[in-house]
Structure formats: C-alpha cells, structure tokens
Image 1 (cartoon, rainbow, N blue to C red):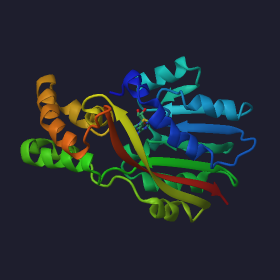
Image 2: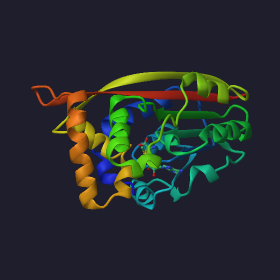
Image 3: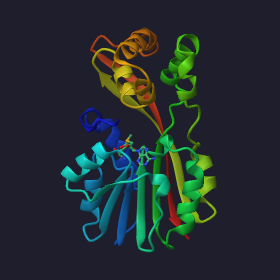
Length: 249
Ligand SMILES: C[S@@+](CC[C@H](N)C(=O)[O-])C[C@H]1O[C@@H](n2cnc3c(N)ncnc32)[C@H](O)[C@@H]1O
C-alpha cells in the first residue's frame, strides 16, 4: 500500500525530476493533460497551474493516493496505467516515477505514442538505481538469508535513455537523457528509510512486522557501510534517473 504522508516527506527530492521533465515539454495550449501514476497529486497541481485552460486528469492504481490527490483538488481516478489509452484530444501525457513498477512498459509506451494525436507530448521519468549498492545489497541479503523473497527482487525493470529513445522514436521526435542526483538525506539509516518507502515495498508487504524488523536490522549495517553518514548527520545518496520526452509526429 502506498502511504501519501510518508511519500510526501521526501517531496523535494521527488519533485525536482518532475519539474525538470515537464520543463522539456513544449506544449502551449493543450486540450487534455493526463498524469499517469499521479501519486498524492501535489505535482499534478503544477500541471493545472501551467495549463489552466486544459482539462487535467490523473490516474493512479492506489485508492489512498487517489484520495490524497482529490484532496489536492485534482480530478483523479483509480486505474492501472496498463489499461489506459489516449483519447483523441490528449495533447500532453506525463508519467513520473511510475513505469518502473509496470512490467512490459516499453510496449505500452510504443502503443501510446502510436495512438496520441500528431503534435502531442509524452514525458516519462523512471529511477535507474537498480544496479546501485542499495539494490545490490538488498538482493545479496535476500539471496543469503531470505531466499523465499527472491522472486520479489526486480532486476533491470527500466531501459536506459537510448532504450527509451529507440522505443519512442518510430512515432515521435525524442529528447532523452539521464541524470544522477546526489541526494542529501538526513537522520539515522537514511538510505534504509528512503528505500523502505520505494524499492522495499514488495518485501515489506510479504513479511509480518517481526520479520520486517529483522530484515531491516540485517540490511541497516550493510547500507551504513556503503553510504556512510557524515559527522554533520547527512548521508549522500546518488540517485540515477532516466528521462524521455517525445513529441508525436
Ligand atoms: C513513486 S510514486 C510517483 C507519484 C507521482 N507521479 C510523483 O512523481 O510524485 C509511484 C506511483 O505510481 C503508482 N502506480 C504504481 N503502479 C501503477 C500502475 N500500474 N498503474 C497506476 N499507478 C501505478 C503508485 O500507486 C504511486 O502513486
């Protein structure tokens, strides 16, 4: 289950890539703007502010997130992005930090750019940390001590920038890039806290409270060694993200 309150506690690190993605979308007066996997809707609101004359709709598979988005005044509905298809008036689609959870999403992207009207814009951002120490250490721990969780470990669920350019390039002009943000996290076990709310969610869901506490206790020292905490209390956490903006021909 996604927790809107925990999610918003990291809002700044999360919102920066959204803004950098949307800044590359050049639409002037779109008819319909769609935010796929909108989360708590705080970022969807910035789309409403940028394109006040557009119909802005948002979708998320989590009822809790949709409820939070509605509280932000966003027209949000519960839906799986895999079931979404563009209407003829959809001029902008944004999907930020969502498709890493969606198996086979390159095929969806190919379908969406093939169905969007000429001139429409599609902006995609996904995290690309799956080879980073945080994820590698988690996989190692699972392999050595929780082999029953191996099926939950996701290896390489995203493409690199060239991969997305390739997928989108048949039907669109593509602007694709990647960035590694050096995130400054604070507090004890800051990296563990960060990934508990993201990559470890499937592990959390599979374990009872006692087993989850045991899992975290085993992972914490490994993460502390890989991401040492500075004397000032900060922990630097490199975070790679992959972006693609497509303009349909
Ligand atoms: C990391 S959050 C990103 C939220 C928002 N786009 C942002 O940038 O803050 C991922 C969101 O994707 C949603 N999600 C994951 N899989 C989904 C799916 N298959 N269909 C719709 N939403 C999905 C989750 O419920 C969650 O709200």
